[in-house]
Length: 206
Image (cartoon, one colour):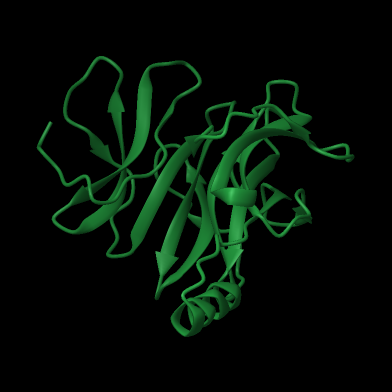
């Protein structure tokens, strides 16, 4: 394959049958979505756009690919058929910046993380005035495949980041950056209740 820039990277994922890999790739300053045979070969472009595309995750049934797209500096979650047709925008929030989406095993629910542009602007102001640095708070959400029924799944002011669904369709692992800039892995439950902390090392756990 042609050598490409690694300045921008996103999620790559296997198709459910293990025959293809979908990924985002920077070609001449444009980050678009591609797929390639697991046996190798020249990749096939799924999306051709001047906008930034990050992440490409198949649904468990192989029918859909969900991804993030940035338009005019605003990041939203989009979906398309696995052949690259039928693109549809799922989130439309100018303040919240949504990304890193994954399908739950039911093929009907998408989990993702989001942060608020207004909050990062305030944190930047604080940093410039006081020198104090703070992590960007992020919230994990779920929504239906059509963008409806958006539900927050984390409820702290921490950076709750990189959600990944468990095979049981109920739990999800994610990373929380807590006190002292310590990164740890947590287990959330879509049925509710407090998340369970899984790692305790005073270092990066991700």
